[in-house]
Amino acid sequence: MLKKILMIAGILIVGITIFSLLNKPLEADTIVANKENQKPSISKEEDEEISTMKLVTEKIYEKYDTLKFVVGTSSKKELRIQVQGDKNDFDSIKNDIELIAKDVINSSPIKEFKVIVEWVDIPAVKGNIKIENKNKELSLLTHTLMVGLKQFDVIGDIGTEYQKNITIQTSLKGNGEKAQKSALEIEEKVNQLLTSKELSSVSKIESYKIRILNTDGKAIN
Image 1 (cartoon, one colour):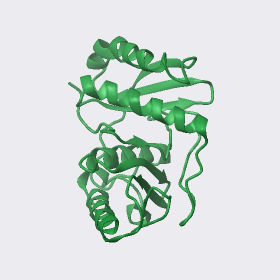
Image 2 (cartoon, rainbow, N blue to C red; image 1 turned 90 degrees about the horizontal axis):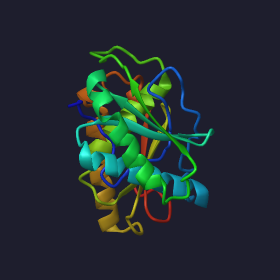
Image 3 (cartoon, rainbow, N blue to C red; image 1 turned 45 degrees about the vertical axis):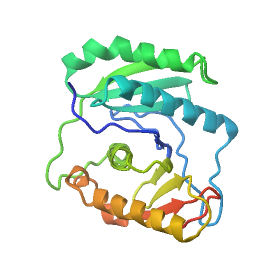
Image 4 (cartoon, rainbow, N blue to C red; image 1 turned 120 degrees about the vertical axis):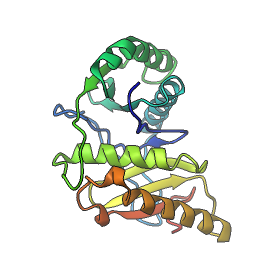
């Protein structure tokens, strides 16, 4: 089976840096949380779209828990699922993944979207080799955060802004001692992931600032 770095477990990428793993970029908007003390700006339509992508990801992950893939939407009303790994393995599960996605979106606000499942070939990156394409870096960064933060059930959307911010929306309430303690634990885990072997190829990894937001959209770390 294909090797692991999957995104999810009740979390979704939002910072949708919805991106492509190929050199044919996915045409999607980037959603990044606003400045401190402001609520993230996400419309109802975007929120519904994000929720649907999250559900698609969860359903695929339920069946293929070691699969490495990206779920994104494009301005062409496409739901794209890009899968990395062995081509033969991909060919054997492509149709099933498409059926899973279609089953989810058929009862969603994006039911008119076309489902595209495609294989991407990304060579393994070793040592300090840098990935020049920022979309690839954001993809790797976001996937690693999603997998690494699965243990925290308060995690909501994760936004990444290239070489600037990592913004994590949570269900933590207020700014009390308990919320701050949880935020600190999340921040410590993110710092561990940023210095992990999995992200050694990401350029200027030290430039990312971590912001943990409560339910009011306020930074609590």
